[in-house]
Amino acid sequence: MAYLDNAATSQKPLPVLDAMERFWREQNANVHRGVHYLSQVATSEYEAAREAVQRFLNAPTLQEIVFTKGCTESINLVANGLSSSGGKSGTRGSSNAWIGEGDEILVSTMEHHSNIVPWQIAAEKTGASVKPIPVTDECQIDLDTYSKLLQSGRVKVVGIVHVSNAIGTVNPVKEMTRLAHEAGALVLIDGAQSAPHLLIDVQDLDADFYVLSGHKLYGPTGIGVLYGRKTLLEQMPAYQSGGDMIRTVSFSKGTTYADLPAKFEAGTPSIAGAIGLGKAIDYLENLGNNSSPSHLRHSLKSTFDQIEHQEADLERYGAARLSEIPGLKLYGPRNGKAAILSFTLESAHAHDVGTILDMDGVAVRTGHHCCMPLMERLGVAATTRASLSFYNTRDEIDRLVVSVRKVQEMFSR
Image (cartoon, rainbow, N blue to C red):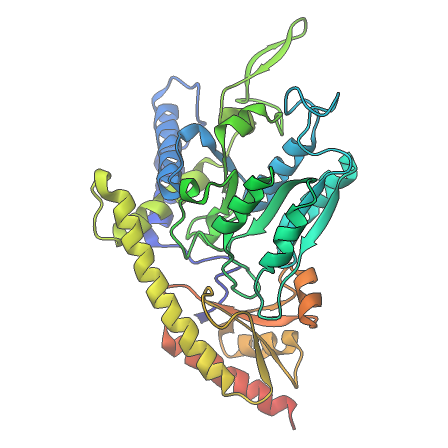
């Protein structure tokens, strides 16, 4: 199979699979509080994964790294926290929330549904409104309109995707964050698609919140990360309650919560998932040919320099080859984009394209890609998306092109 569906989930390197199998076979125990050997080992491995994520994001402290199920849960956690009473102290009357009645939340038209719907729910709960940041005909964020939207004085939160999962646009999130902060708004950056392709530095971006999913970053499913600025996480109310997120529980005196990040990690976590994600990051660091602890960040930069070069070559090659096919239209910016080839074929529906490609052993994704507002903006119901990773090859793209030509011939008869 030519696997060209990496934006949905990536394939996993052997070190990730081996580490997870080793945990289940030799280290299986619950983390934290256990005094026996296996629990101590499991806890050590679990927290080592948190340290790997801190390095990967260049976060200031371990307390700012919260493990979740994925980007979706991370965004829901933040949206709930910013719209719930008992969060921000001393503001907005009795609600004590960041988001209140009459406030505005900005999200772009190219967002995945998981960075739209949680904010719509937050708006319904508080009386705020969600306003879209438009996309230009060149499939870029309309920065002029974005700047004007911020001038209302009512914007409290901006949710922006770093890299579009549907069309590959790489958004200017650093500049957008700067503008939002000048307007007094908080910023959440969705890094689901950027984490596998770009070197991320949350301090350089000045992000308030940054989220990523392990399974797109060559790790397992069911594990994700929320980076949150410590001062914000400390003020936000707990998202879920249960074991491991409390300090004390009393019927007479009530409950007090644990320090960060445990405050947001209720119950037994995905221990093997976290370990797998940590090993995926170790794998990327080792690809940079310098695994010395003092040079891991430099090694990671070397890895992503190579990844960006390889994927840019594949994207350019694929775009050139697909553009030769009559009736095929590519979507997304032509320059400065991630390795995503999203297209429609004049004679065939995207689902038919995907089905026939599958018969030829070419795996792609078809549909609206959980980006219905963007599809509406583009004027299409669905696209076929070939999403690439550094382990793909030109030969696999050639197989894609041959299969698409077959579809074109079949449906143009």
